[in-house]
Image 1 (cartoon, rainbow, N blue to C red):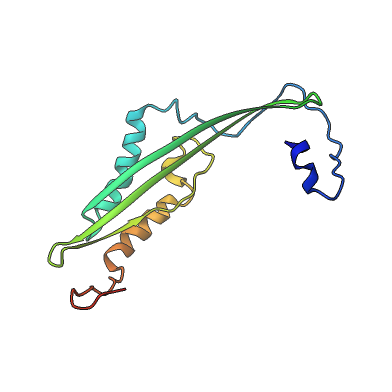
Image 2 (tube, helix red, strand yellow; image 1 turned 90 degrees about the vertical axis):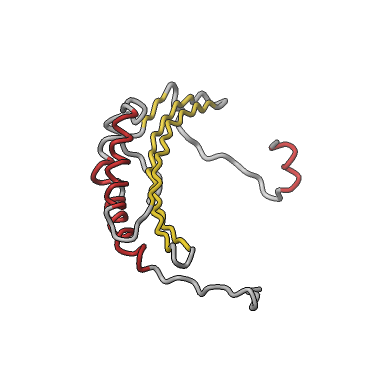
Length: 157
């Protein structure tokens, strides 16, 4: 590929000197492998979070999920480096729905916490601000301003 694209580059490119890392292993920090946590325990945590949202006035439905990733990458180059890397990330998500049966409308709000490197059990209380985010969802969802209703006699486009 470098040979093919060389014609597009006007300047000579030289690689910076870098030490060789032979048989190097790097593993991200985590206390508990989320894939070793029993499914029942994961469900219990999501059930607890869902219950917090359902306890709020106006919340009619909650969906919860957990994405867990254990990524393993192997890198080798012609200089002699060979590196194995492992990263672990989890991302719990919750979505609360409130329904206005009289108007035939609904509103949803979803957590936005990004995936982070943490273990399955420590996520119970400190999941990257998820607990605070749940409290915000409970307070804000029933009060979110509703968009103006569209009328059949007035197109919105």
